[in-house]
Length: 389
Ligand SMILES: *Cc1c(COP(=O)(O)O)cnc(C)c1O
Image (cartoon, rainbow, N blue to C red; front, side, top):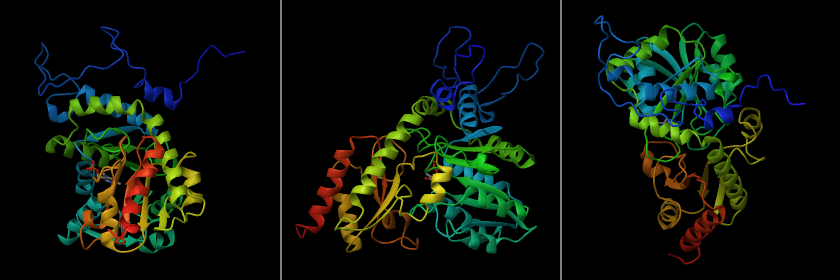
């Protein structure tokens, strides 16, 4: 017999319904957008909580934050105007001269941020090969390291890092663990459940999913003074996500589970198709059983592996650029996590000094008909390699 007393709706249901939102005055099932820049004081001339001015945030943004905190199993979440502004706030909040441990190769914007702070003498930085916990352990300075940064899966080669293992290494040394799981959003990886202290996502990507918002989010297990300091910085810099964008994000997140499921299934089919292909040197995708990150990924990504992969094509750098150029369905654009598929020659985008294979094409697989996507890559490869173009 069905238990009719109480059932806590699942994460899927809660996200689809934006936490079963109903506007009390009207019954509307979609939240309104609150765009005000200022808030009137009350009849006693006291500031109405919790907002005083736009830089404090808004109810629309707070609603989006509540949906993400729920998805992440977090105590609190904070949305910023972009992923990079969230990362910058976090890094700004570290004590001057703090020691941090980061992947040697990672999302290029965050890497450049750490290297810039290091160059200015504001941080001391040690690095490790993405996914390699032995190197991570060796880079730690117990009692001195403030933060360990893990990106998993890690741009642009999609190495997988064991979050629970990294959390142990960080915590044994008295450091915090931050994860950037933008490539496998919380419907796949709930990093806090695996021991991360802070979870970062570029919400520009899968969380929003429609390539029409930039946003970044930090989620926390135990809000502490550092969390308060990040909030203060967001208020003083005015980098809180705008209400209109927060509203789009709420709408985008309603289909997060469906979109990521479909993108993952498409990506798996494409990875299988191009494995051992005559024009492909290697397929980098943790969903493949042969991938070095597969086993760990199975433990921390909820049965699917996301839509991000890279193809290393045979031949020259120019051949790789031409494959991207000749695509007709994939867009030759940066970013990831949208419904539409993107292809990008990573060396061109991340600059000549960035250590990436010159023939690497990063694919963000969308939710289109997978046969169209496979056809597109095949025709582009064929035009480059078979016609002597
Ligand atoms: C996009 C991205 C960022 C930066 O986020 P923005 O929203 O573009 O500022 C950080 N990390 C990863 C893994 C990303 O993909």
